[in-house]
Image (cartoon, rainbow, N blue to C red; front, side):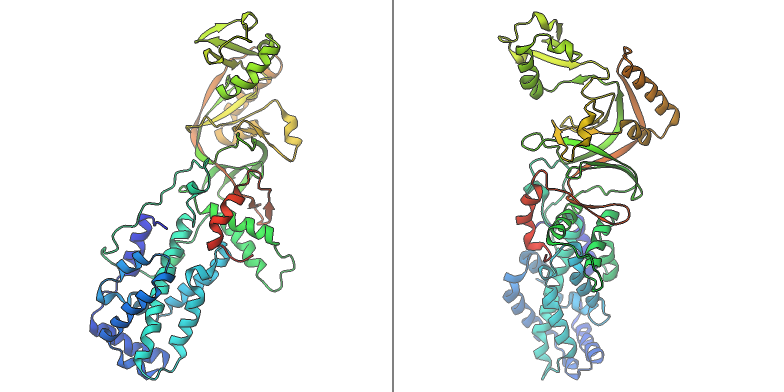
Length: 488
């Protein structure tokens, strides 16, 4: 696994600061003797310990997730007590251990972070009456190595996820930053381990609600247990929530594809929720992406994509040369407007033609479309096909997102009563058959939009919303994530 540059620097500068002298480590031995009431620790010898540490590093290497990285950190002779020397006696290593044990409430397997091994070793170090201090060296070395390997993997996964989404989904268009680690030999400073652990916890409100579902499910008095299918969906959705570089915060739009739902959210509270139609599975899937909604077109013109023109439109014209007229559409040949009824569509070269649908109540984009910059020509829009919103299965579009209540959406985005009322007036006129022109409206304060894929979600009360895996993305992620995943 690769590690984000900044995270690694934080870890190094936060944790690996103990460039201790021999005298300091011998003082550590006296502190151990006092803390754990074992006089044998007083005879702690740094030189002897370092030899054992190097041997344990070699022995444990196959069990470490990042042995090369760990080897770089501990290549200097005085690094073998970096974490243990700083955080064992003051209890902060116990805090790390508890965080690792509680990773199951983040859908992760504590054993991946060596939590089970740390449980046993911490007990031995604290309670075992060693015959001599040399007996303690292998356990202290193991405690150091498992703690370091567990910590860096735990922090990295919480920050960026266990799996690179680009290796799972071909239609994942959110930027991903997972560069190689930097040189482990950087300047080191000390901060509080428990604060570091708190800082790396995901702050997303929906992530925390999913975590709360797992915490509550583990309580003995809970009578409504999660089934295995719902747990799996929660685990996979929490992994996906760790992926985005941009956090879900403030005012934003969230389209959850499997739920066929758009939420208008402000400060982790849903202001409005509406049904949407998304891309059809099997080639027209709505991609996972994000952007800033910065403008909308009222009574829009639909520039019909080549993929639709070359199939649906072209085939319809072969059967009916007046098809375009009946659909309020026009045709252009090499940029020049043509009369479709005068074209021999059975012998025409479709590559020479482009098609548009003029503004009006029957426009396939409805009466308003919402634009955010992206290279895939995906946008949100109204639709005259309102009957689709009565269906449970709403993966029916060519990829763009059809929204059920576009007027409420434009009110949320504009936050300007007079401008919103003007838009309503224009669209009503178009619905009444008035001839209208397309008009652009700029959104003064652009709003982030996230098109995402979560088969497990929650309402604002923290209740689980479980959706079908409409695109089969859970099935693709599960085999890659299983090594990191909590038990079902």
